[in-house]
Image 1 (cartoon, rainbow, N blue to C red):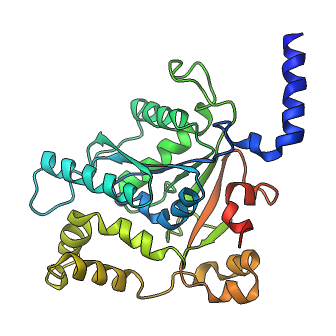
Image 2 (cartoon, rainbow, N blue to C red; image 1 turned 180 degrees about the horizontal axis):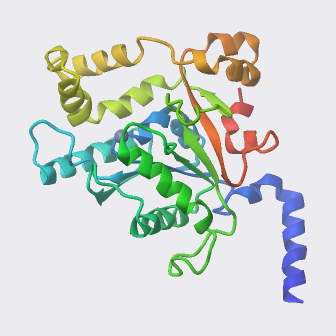
Image 3 (cartoon, protein in one colour; image 1 turned 90 degrees about the vertical axis):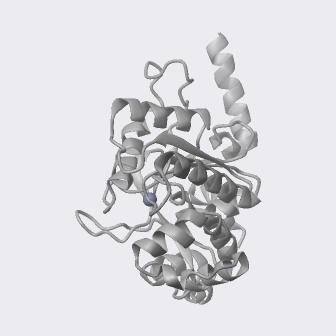
Length: 297
Ligand SMILES: [Zn+2]
């Protein structure tokens, strides 16, 4: 009797609330988790997460490692402290929490222990959408982040795995961030979000990563001498270099499909996502539910 009453209530709520029920938190808010390997990796989708955050949805950014390896002068412990603080500030730019785990940079492995960390994060955030890198990448930490999330994708719904953290009733949508790698298979955009209107915010997020944008990355690529001295000059320099060319060309057909001929052709900057094929599938029917700003254009 109790079961049938529950079913009856569920049908009623479904009729009146429609897709609201899709949200895992039960409050109509989408809950998005972006899982990267390093502090500054989730920023790859900074424009899109900013759009979600602006609409009141709940965004959590995660770095699985503490970034304690990539710097020319800092010792590991000090670097981890700096990177955690830079990430926290980057999240603050868009009003999102940013968690940096204490796994060592350059040493991430797809172990069961790390899989449980990922399952815990996804469950505790009650994620509707999980965004992460494909397991094809030049950097082992990126590859294993992809593998760890794929390995967690089904397990987040299995009650006997990590039983102390309640399992998810509904499997989230698991989306890949874009990349340029073609072996063994190239990235295919299932959805592409225009970010021309929020590109400055995305650069503001990167700007918080002083030890990377203005120290390690220029050192690593041999142009440390080009980095300006003051904060304002650095922000301007970063913006200029990041916006030096449109990134939309590979996604033009998708942009025209989504935004129409005129707008689709005019977009300069965008962020693309691919359905990993695991978890809940992204469909034509639920696309604007998960990406509500596509509907509001
Ligand atoms: Zn990285």
